[in-house]
Amino acid sequence: MLSLNKHLRQIVSLATVVALAIVGVLVFAALAAGTSKTKPSVRRSHLHVFSHHLARRARAASADSLTAPTGAVLALVADGTQVYAQEKTSELCVIHLTASDGGGEVCAAAGLVESEGVVGVGGGGIASDGSLVSLHITALVPNGVKSVHFADTNGEAYDLPVTNNVVTHEDTGVALVSYSLPGGGTHVTNVVKMISSLPRKAEPAGSSQ
Image 1 (spheres, rainbow, N blue to C red):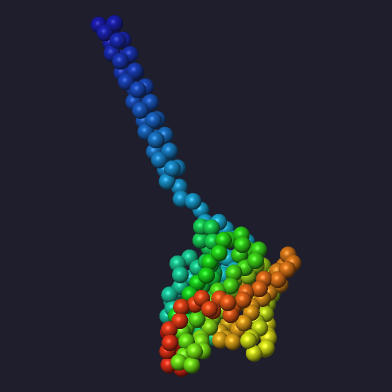
Image 2 (cartoon, helix red, strand yellow):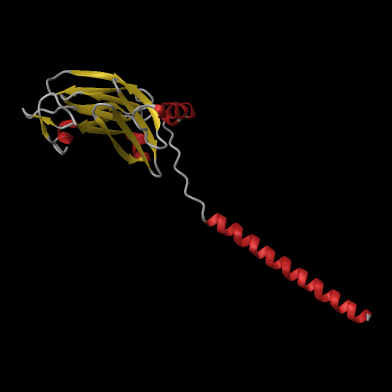
């Protein structure tokens, strides 16, 4: 009888060890499965516009009549236009939304935007006389750029200040946009050339789309 009890105890002990081993394998498998589902994180930009303070401002603006892009940061509100900056997986974008004239966005590789910036040009169609109804210039510029220079086709020139790495302006006469880079050199955008590639739709003078 003692021998039988001893034998039974050995069987129970062996079963316990096997059960613990199985549990250990299951726990390890669960941990491995959890690790394999980790999503790649969005690259964090060095641009000042993506500070925590500005992110709170963007959430506060969500009650506006215009719908802010998910995850975007409200950088500037000027003349009825809201300008947002957004971080994507490998790109940085600048978006403008205007209540009466829609909006648009332009994106570029994050490293390129941080070193040189990006300038977006958007048009609101053409009038019956062939002129542009509206022309929006929106830029996301590197840290340290204080102002952006605008040169019109009629020879006029002026500078506009940068706010939270962005600037926006509406002027159908803009020919060139430029700014000095902190590391040296000048970033120049030929607006006239970009306008030539914009889709256009003839409209009565004074109307917009």
